[in-house]
Image (tube, rainbow, N blue to C red; front, top):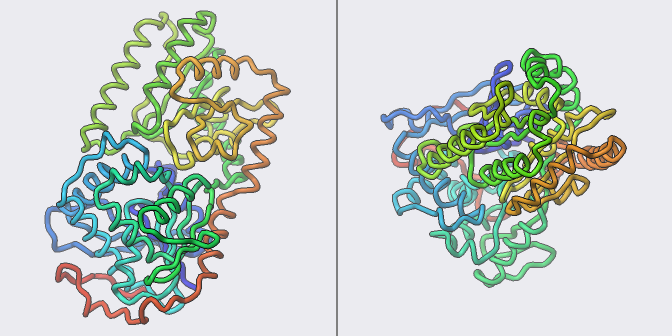
Length: 484
């Protein structure tokens, strides 16, 4: 059986270089061990269309990474345009930020078709396809057009919002109907699944039995697969990383103060402004914490070509400056804001040094930072996770201090509680969360989805006729030698 994994961002990390995004970080170890072929965009677009569709392959453990070239013009409309200015805000319930046009949507559909056609060079009769995230909602539809009858699965790493939110998304009906070409659609939580099923029932007038919906396109099954992490590997990495120079310097620089840490992409879904306001309130109401607590916020730059992200960068920098200006002492700054990425090895060392892990997303599919923070802790003296109730992780890690990120006072009080929590309670909470992490690991998530996809019947959706030459995308040839 050949497993072909598809996502927009792929990674083939060298050494300690940072991996962008939770999706890529999760798939790297899975591809390494499973032998899957992982396909995505090269993210090195040029103005020329001559290299569009050109693919390169690199080994990754037992598997391989294949990158597909996309022209700059098409990628902009696909990525900054429809994917991240329409789909991302919609799926995170920010309808006020939806901004797109028909050209963006056309680019989105064209890129889905281009990469689908690229996959034909990798396909064989025993292949299965596993497509990831909102960038490729229509991928299965395009693969079916090209004659692919093998099982095709899809996984939402984002939340899936309520029906009234989805109705605000341009082209929502076309997109969801195209998704019914998938055999299996996976979600992070039961609530996400129910929202999707509600749309099918109310808007498309479909009836489902045990979350299986049948149309003239075939049967599509909905199921919940909460993503995990490689718990043992990350815990071992944290022990090793505690002695890395960056972690050693961090601990030394604290001069005895307790560390509160947040690690996020700079995105409006992460609740970063509210988080900083909660810390400001903590320092105002509890001056005894001055010099006794330091907050480290790692804010990885993201989607800088989109205006709302540039605005958020400026607001964060301004708020950090304001808070530090009012609370800093000669030899102490309350907030250390690092606007750059770090390797997972470095982050593991930072997490282990932190007394409190702060995850206050306004809306998140899962949030693997929460799980990594827990896994990185010292079992003898673990830190405390303060976790937004609006993350998928909160459905599993209920032994965390679960907060409403919109409640500034509530978040502030939870941090105070975490800082003063006795070691016995910290160990009890940590033990409960670690048990959960081990029972829903990354390997289990990967194997569970793949085994469920393998059980999907070989649908009579279309015949096995992957003839690349007869189905060109925009009349350009794919420059990829077939991989055996």
